[in-house]
Amino acid sequence: MLVSAKEMLKKAKAGKYAVGQFNINNLEWTKAILLTAQEMNSPVILGVSEGAGKYMCGFRTVAAMSAAMIEDLGITVPVALHLDHGSYEGTKACIDAGFSSVMFDGSHYPIEENVAMTTELVGICGQKGISLEAEVGSIGGEEDGVVGAGECADPDECKAIADLGVTMLAAGIGNIHGKYPDNWAGLSFETLEQVKNKVGDMPLVLHGGTGIPEDMIRKAISLGVAKINVNTECQWAFQAATRQYIEDGKDLKGKGFDPRKLLAPGFEAIRKAVKDKILLFGSDRKA
Ligand SMILES: [Zn+2]
Image 1: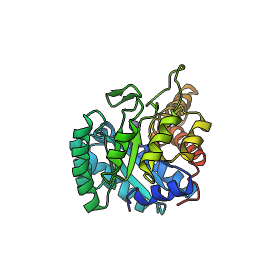
Image 2: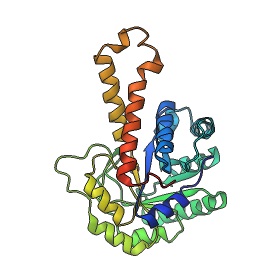
Image 3: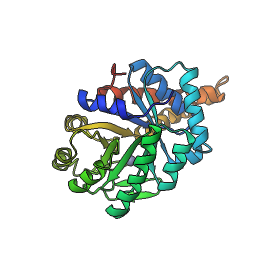
Image 4: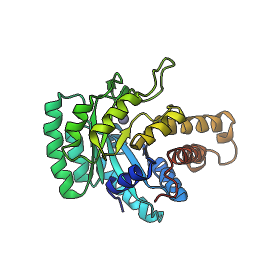
């Protein structure tokens, strides 16, 4: 059964660890993440961008596949199915489709509009027991065509959004999606600390978890980050392992062309990437 992310993040915040959100792209991705979370006895959040949702036929398909997979694989750790960077329409569609968690990314609207739309969604999600993530201060890099410069969130705006009753808050602290440039200035812990002081117990979300040095991740967790999004890292792991399989000519040997064999190295590589992150975030044995 899919659950809201509320309880797992409350526990993570109190226990000073973070729950990983791992974005999914297909059945193999979902299966790899679920099996690894179960093996590590860790709560987990399956992230779905609007683009990935379309790619997988639609949000209803994703919700049905995830819920059925949890049953068929005998997954007992808490699993939330979460819309990543949702538009207003996309957020509503995922609520209707059976997602247990959604992010409404109103960061590109003026704060008044972000507040108005978030307020409406807080009401809907509250009624349905769905967790809601909001964002203040755009996160840099590109995600499904949404490009941000990696600005730092205004702590007062963070408080204004947090006070609406959202479950968790993504605040830009210099983090970006995808690969970090060589001249990246690093996370702004000053901003993170100011935001934390304003929003109190609200679990904070760190986007763009790929490529942030481990000591910065640990420090961010110690300052109130309870959810960390990982996407690119699993893609790189899958790509490298699949490339190796082909370059080694394994697809040409015996039944190496069988998709179940062809996709197996990438699948295992995702499992390893997820396991490493769960250990880094400290959510193992916390289910
Ligand atoms: Zn993000």
